[in-house]
Length: 526
Image 1 (tube, rainbow, N blue to C red):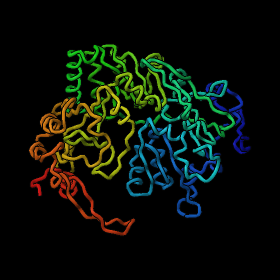
Image 2 (image 1 turned 180 degrees about the horizontal axis):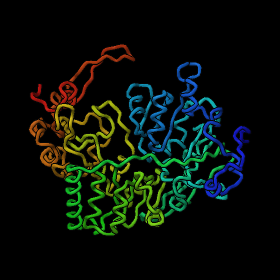
Image 3 (image 1 turned 90 degrees about the vertical axis):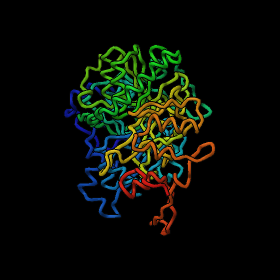
Image 4 (image 1 turned 120 degrees about the horizontal axis):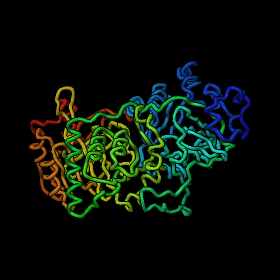
């Protein structure tokens, strides 16, 4: 592929930092400014906005967006506000993109993060593609790099995610070399993806094991442009801890100590996986002050509290697929951590085979858990998408210990405990009762291992539910899972504007009570 002449730039204007980072000189001939790419790459928001292209159906631009997990909200939220996104896979975090999904403007399908990259290489996302190279599911890939090696390999930044597979599947590549952040060469372990029957086993038996290369090999002819960036990661501050999150952490650390004492866990535990949010921060912070030494971590995302965990001397090694440090956290001296930290692709980090082999202790936060231990991680009130499934189910299905932690309640506008996170019936199920071993709230911890549904229900209610809801939750019927359908569910009518018909909407009564009265506290079952 020959580069378009308009993208060539006078080499005299190339910064010293970029010359140092891009060690294959021929690629500097492809240096461009973002505005230069507008004739080629139609998703330049500045160009679309400046020319008011979205106002005219004839010039309106829309595209399908594939990201390993999430991209900065300042990017995809702006695209969403401009109504530029037609489809989005498989996970997102922006408020505006969530609004677009729930309004029906953006088609969204979340997917287990371990499966998204492989499905991309299988061609599942280009079954209806009618343009370009049919062997390449993606038209464009935009990748952040911190360096390019002499042989044209791309050294990634603070995230790997699905980047190897995205680059493998793209016709054209734009490399954004970020000279603001350190060159993170040596921090990554990248392996190539194969499709059946040529897939290879991931030969990982220990958290530290490397099976790949420190950079991604690509056909440099597919690199259309190099863009220099000097912007820091816009991660924002981490979620602050609070009294409830610290109480949850205390219950969990006590539970893990009891497992060690009983001989079911070694003294340094087993590798830990932790989600994101204030509860996860409290747990990692509690472990930094806790009794366990030489702890190892096998997770998806590292937050600031892991720096404290490293600095305490109690975390010996961590592997993840991305780093979400605050601006202050990103200013660390990376040389102090490079030998104790490794970033992998999400297909490896979330591999069910590896999670099961290593005996991971998985800890994640749901929206709600019902009294049988079905968990909803994605859809508020059963229908309003928040972010997506992410990798929680990859870990919870396969971990040695599968733990869900959540506050027992959340406030509404009119009631400080108006939402119960322990419900009679989950309004949507992402993780089933067959996946979870432990449920913990600030009220207490329910160890569900080996228990039947009839045994789990009273234990979750007594140990985990907020006192305001315990009595309502105790209403039970008969059978293997003794719920009372006439109480658990309530039928409501709504008008489907797409089908132009009135349909029944069956939702759990806790949730209908919240929709009607602003609280889940049911005064009378009907």
